[in-house]
Length: 410
Image (cartoon, rainbow, N blue to C red):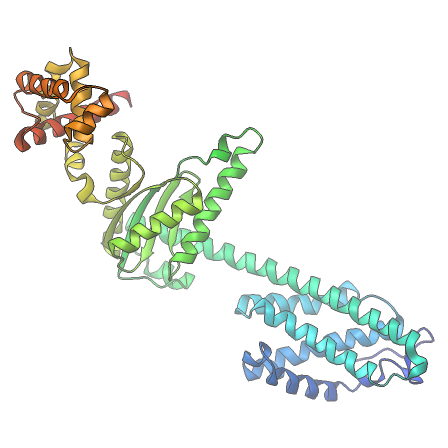
């Protein structure tokens, strides 16, 4: 490694150039390797990396320090380029940023110790100047290494996001995803939890003082970050600010899924509506169509936010299929069209699990009036809402009526 000759501008310590103890690069290298091997987080790095990349590039820092001490100047961009390149390489290899910065900083610290321990009483002014050079070097190296590391990490994350997006598209379309997974380095699971998710607007999105798109993207990033935290393996997702599809590898029980929905709602700061189905990898396209159909159904029926499975909406799901059965069910309620108060009473009575007292409180009526209305419904429709057989037909008829109304409006 070439070192410039000392000039008259160089910093002097103990009657010699301050850079003198740093010029024996082999001795410095041995000192660095011994130090890094004995200290964490550097000591957790592989031995070949300590003896190779780590030592080589901390010695590079020391060589830059020599130039700075001899010429009393900041490091140049070309001198820092090699350090930036190595920081980028370590980011791609998964070396923690803490280790990267520790390597640089402790190498610089060792260089300073070699310089300062030779100083005598008459070297105060030059020693202060030398300290300024080392502080400047540490600052420049930290900025250059951190910037390059983060930029490379962002590039890697972007590549992974693109690969994951491609894999999700392949899984949802039913195409062979094995080759795509292999190319992207993402391991395919045998089974996935398939989620359809609806994310309502955050209050900030309606705040005129806040840009709507910014508030929506913040909400989405919070959801994505929580997904990454909760899921042990990386979830595969196609999400927008309004919702989308999530594939979570492995089999998850009901309690885990309910906890996930709660955490995602907390992160989004709005209540989410989520439908879920477990599926083998080959069955993901069918499961995805089904959960999105269930999600649309929950919205059509104005169901409250939360988690829904097929068991929760199986009757309603079946009634989405047009046909004579659904038309027959819808016609059951036609005699109530002339008495909207009866239809309202029926809906509230069902929503309160057939509890007459609670229904009466919501309607601001006496329970006797509720009883009278229920009897009138039985007389007009032929189905008694106080009996299990009657309520089943009437509830199905209400669902059929809502579905036809919503589909007709669409």
